[in-house]
Image 1 (cartoon, rainbow, N blue to C red):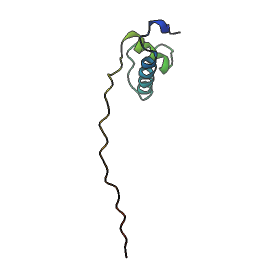
Image 2 (tube, rainbow, N blue to C red):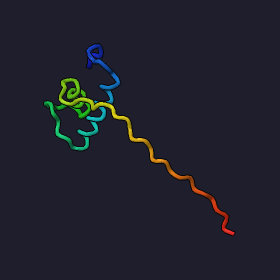
Image 3 (cartoon, helix red, strand yellow):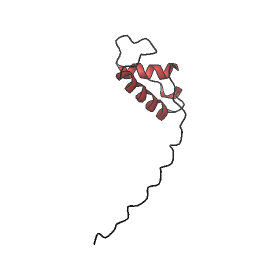
Image 4 (cartoon, rainbow, N blue to C red):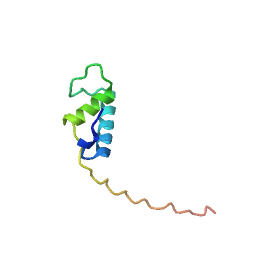
Length: 75
């Protein structure tokens, strides 16, 4: 069980552990002792021990403006 009082940001923990679990499921090498634990538990342990950490948020690039399609009469 995870002691939430020791987490600075629960949301960041969940997002980071979830992303790491997806990486582990895709074949990434675990950075902590696995034992008989599931990939999600291993991911949570990696985040808690500091073996992986969240990347700082970067604002996405602005969308490229698209010219509207001009309707023409084909007469």
